[in-house]
Length: 245
Ligand SMILES: Nc1ncnc2c1ncn2[C@@H]1O[C@H](COP(=O)(O)OP(=O)(O)OP(=O)(O)O)[C@@H](O)[C@H]1O
Ligand SMILES: [Mg+2]
Image 1 (cartoon, rainbow, N blue to C red):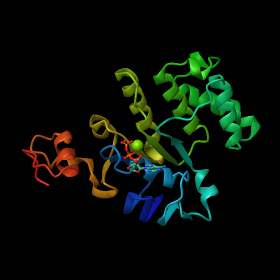
Image 2 (tube, protein in one colour):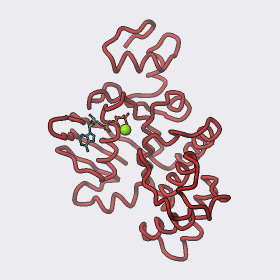
Image 3 (cartoon, rainbow, N blue to C red):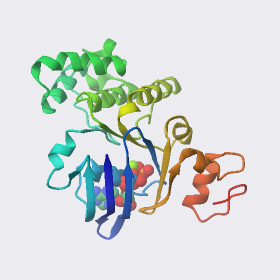
């Protein structure tokens, strides 16, 4: 579903992404991990088409960028790191606006707003202005807008950042239930989230992929199954007790 080859992004003089390649298939939930500044958001911003790669190729469902980028973008739902929401719109009006941007047929818009509002538990705040919502509810609105066109590919940059533990739990369940027929990339710093959700882990450090494999294999690198320790060993040059890379 997603194929990336030799992707590079340079913000002179910074090489934010340094020639990464991977393929993600339907049904996979991939946890994209890495220290601050590693290149995670830059990678997902290239896949979602927000920024142009310096070099390398991207294909989403066999649609190659840049020629087919608009078609590819129709298949992607994206929750960005700093969710771009229009604060002076109500939740309902915002979702309606996004549905129109996504060119959903008029007769389907109500139905889709109801569907995503149910999934993201937004029914009680439909008429509330977004700027008056709590941080967690803003995050839910951001998720809802990413789902409004029922995309095959979901790209979530720190989707549970700022949510309380109950909401985190709910959002994870929601992502899991949605993922069966989709391909999901989740950038996160929460390793328990990776364990709970992701079938596969990809670690980026200094713009390069330093691990790409099954979550169970990642975990098995620590003799006590401590993900934090494996992460630290892979992304720093420190010797970490109990970890064998
Ligand atoms: N628009 C930009 N202009 C210049 N440099 C940028 C830009 N966007 C990102 N960078 C740089 O690219 C590098 C990778 O940043 P990126 O945002 O991809 O990191 P990240 O892995 O998402 O980190 P975090 O965990 O903090 O969100 C950083 O050094 C960052 O300063
Ligand atoms: Mg980021």
